[in-house]
Amino acid sequence: LPPWFGRWKFLFKVFFPFLLGRFVLAPLPFYYLFGPDAFRYAVINLLLAELLTNVHSFAVIVPNHAGKDMYFFSEPCKPRSGHFYLRQILGSANFSTGTDLVDFSQGWLNYQIEHHLFPDLSMLSYRKSQPLVKALCKKHGVPYVQENVFTRLKKTVDIMVGNSDMRNFPVQYY
Image (tube, rainbow, N blue to C red; front, side, top):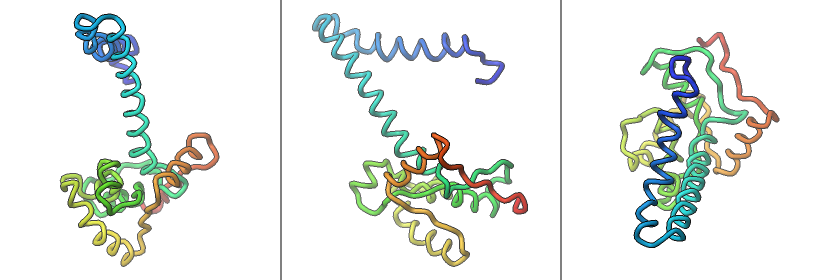
């Protein structure tokens, strides 16, 4: 947390209000309309939904940016420069892509490279831009990483438990 915010301020201004709103106030009508059992089941349902949503978000977002084949950048670069766009490719990976079901289930974040290159592009346009980006990377010898979600998840866990490290971006290229 930033020093100006502090732990207690975070707890009382952010965390506890979230808990109160999400897990007490939101299901409270169930208590008054249907009784304490309905309230309890509503809270359990909300807790499980929160857990599943966070697990899904983690699995879709984090593995696209972590693994021994991804670069770690210790220095900033100028936005929208050639160096910036190179970093977007070297620091991101795509999951399997191309079908409506796969794309929808991953919120089109399986096109992470295209997402980072063109954040204002519509989700449906990522699929159209992918072959162009792949061809451009191949032409210039830039690695374009695309693997299934489980392979990427394994690489992320390896980083988390210390079995491997992300690659440092070579200093001579800064």
